[in-house]
Image (cartoon, rainbow, N blue to C red):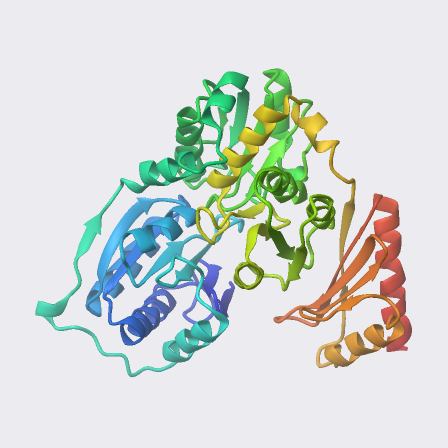
Length: 460
């Protein structure tokens, strides 16, 4: 059983003992702390709640909504929803915050509470620490019977979210419709099975092959949209001669594509392609996190614009985007953040922009992919002894490569011309994660092996 408390929320496996997993006791304690923080911070007693389709969702929803009512908070319940839809709804409802009940790409035994501020963005590091501190404070008081919060059910945000996507100037519905795309989708039996087909229909896509679009929470494969989990959608694309496949994770904030031959477009290249399209139409800066592909920087600089890197984590990417006035940004895990819509990863916005780009390019999806720089990322880790001075170890690596460009805003990232290696320590276990990127798989692996060898030599 697992329970992880972080600045962005609480997540864990369902069942087990309180304090060791995501039990009703933990859900109530954490929800009450967030609700109390909202009331103290804003004086506004309205919170939006939405959930993905995982099996535990209804149970967690009942506990969360009931707890918020018990401290005098009015709840707007969106029911089955997506992370970006809740993010859109919070400012629309003039709410003080939002809670998304989803464990994102984690397997079915997991669930989580993701916490938003009044702008519909993930709460900051400082805000998260304040909520965690309140959760450990047993001195919570609850509302009397005449002051209990009320619940309003609102299922209109499916259409409202789609309307916002259609209203974006760069979403070219006519071009998409004229392209007569045949699209296969895999929504891993979560809420993407509701939202993605509805969006495609609104975009004028008439031929859709639906795979795992029943929102019952029974994930038919590992829900993280990685190539090894997407063999079935690949087969559906090939057998139906579809123009492309679209894959989303359970809460629809990650997006990846399958080429017409069943090969993978590459989730790292979702943001690259969308950014390329945006940059072709709107000059401006871009941002991704340090562990994302260099291809975004290449595309940005080719357009004569400026790329900036952020620490890993959506909050950090959003902060850097605001700081640099970026027009597009996100993460290499298929997360597209388009401020013209809102500051949150949004697969629906990503689909609208990508299909517009593909339709106007006149290319097949694999031909479009071939227009971007080819890079390969290798992901490794090295396990260390408990209690080891990992920060000191990273400083020694930094010193060894002091003549190379180095970024230390999140671990240590070292650049070697167009190759790089990024070392990040785990916050929960004695591990250093090592990401490396180069023009080929072999070169990326060799770069990672070289740094791992350096670490072992230092440890001697």
